[in-house]
Image (cartoon, rainbow, N blue to C red; front, side):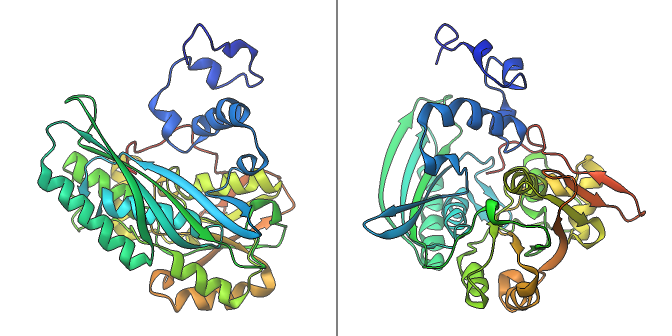
Length: 353
């Protein structure tokens, strides 16, 4: 789109899109800028009820079968980081988006955009990581595409993956189902992926090794659904971190959310790194965690099932949905006060997925 064909003065949202006639990095950060871009530019252009749900994946019906369908692109820098690679990330990220709809991932597509001059050994390493991650997740890569751009017009390797999976009968995961009294559970320690990327990118040392939590969450979700299909919503807090996911759910459900900050599982290494860098762990990206809103009567059983799974052994109840302050997330601090946890404008750490 060019400035001559796009009349931003006619948009209904006064900010921040009108303040940014050109794309900025924050538009890809998973925060308020991303939300405005999707809601006021892409969604009106494309239309459709399934897209309007704006979930991690779209729930659609085809031939009487309920399918989850998702796509994502990966531009992480560097390509290789503690705990994973862009290849693992591409597979696990799309598998997790499908899992957040309750679906068992079945098939993936894979598109590579390669920069002229990138070492073939690096491409092979990425592809091998993707294959291993797909086998571990029980999903098959069945189609793909490759493009090459001139040197200086990429960053080595970019990847796009799309995936489909089947949603079991009786499963209906969406934020509109959240009601006051729902218990908020996070599956484990947050902030590991974003801090791992930053440590490598900037050559920082924090006294201990910090690895990404990159992992496929399909098995954990199936363990939770085996307790009850009546989970209300799941999200994997990637870009924008836990804060962005909670705000999106609060806004879509029309409920308030209260979390107890002291209960949020932040590992000491992440807390120390965020303190040094001036970051808030609630806004740092994760790639192997989920947050669940669960009816109170099922919360204890779901929590036990999560803790019995390797990817949920540190699962913790961190808060609840409430009638008060609809659409807003509030945190009770360790000092006994409260603070509003806003949707981030952009992203504290760009290019992390």
